[in-house]
Length: 104
Image 1 (cartoon, rainbow, N blue to C red):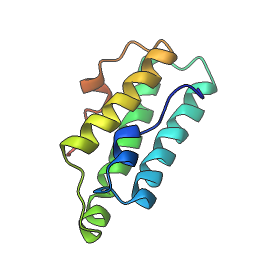
Image 2 (cartoon, rainbow, N blue to C red):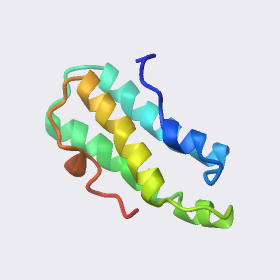
Image 3 (cartoon, helix red, strand yellow):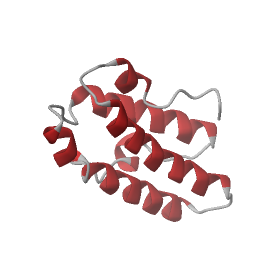
């Protein structure tokens, strides 16, 4: 997984506080750890993606408190990272479905 750059767009944009981007990255890494345990069915994987997305949703107030928000740049960066992970693990879940619980 070293070839995947997590949330590259968010880390490169000073609008996003790095410590909050780190929190999103940790949620994604938790999902990757789940995937590395292997042999999960699509429903279980989607459940873990939903859990990750809901956790990211919960960060919105913290972004606002730090003069930032989960907006288009964040959405694109998160979706790009998750798409790369799904492709790496050969998981056939559409990115819109994978992030279906997002409210950003």
